[in-house]
Amino acid sequence: GGNAKKILRHAQSGKSILGESMVTAIARGFSTSEVNAGMGKIVAAPTAGGAGILPGSLSWIQDKYNFTDDEMLMALLVSGTIGRIIATNATISGAEGGCQAECGAAAAMSAAAIVELHGGTPEQSLTASSFAMLSVLGLVCDPVAGLVEFPCALRNGTGTINALVASDIIGTPVTLLIYGTVLDDLGFTSITYTSSPSAMNCMFIIPFICRAFASLFVYSTILDFTVSLKD
Image (tube, rainbow, N blue to C red; front, side, top):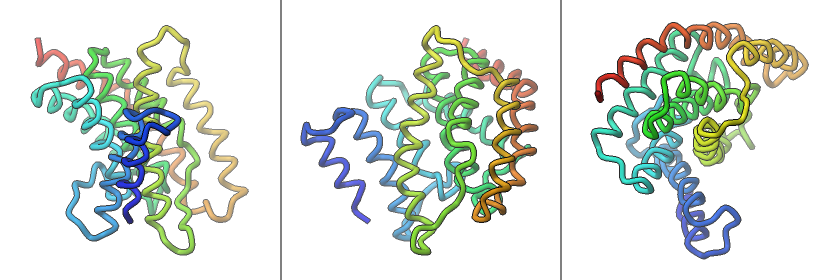
């Protein structure tokens, strides 16, 4: 415990590599995870294991860009839609899918919400969420010294940055992997699972995630509706 405070102090020291602003976001991602590990009260967003990513990234975004609470609520609606897609068609459970399910889902939800806040289209929100998820595909639950929550805390910090990176890339003119290409790569990821005994419990998530991302096309109409509510 106490790592979030140490990271925040490092951010404020002027010696961080990423700079005070970004490292502060990392500290916020850590903090919720540490509160959870200390038996504190948190909001599982979407699970306890990845609960620091959404509040870490969105609170940082609101402070940096002065978004209103109403705008944040709209963003949370978008993130909840993404979370529901993943939970319904795949899994958000670490026991079933490892950290790619928990922290991956949280980063995907956060990325979509951030794109929505910056005026992105529903398709851009979906692409950002898929990019965030793609960045952690294959990430299993691997307790360190039997402590399952130790890697969770670290991954809440990196997951916060993952969401910010995914959302920022969407705002550039670079060519990104589209859904079809992502689905092709998922098949390759499933093969690598079979060679890792520690990941055998997680290998069954792959076909479910394939269906989840296919469903993103269907659910894009939901995001269209959420955007239209602001008009």
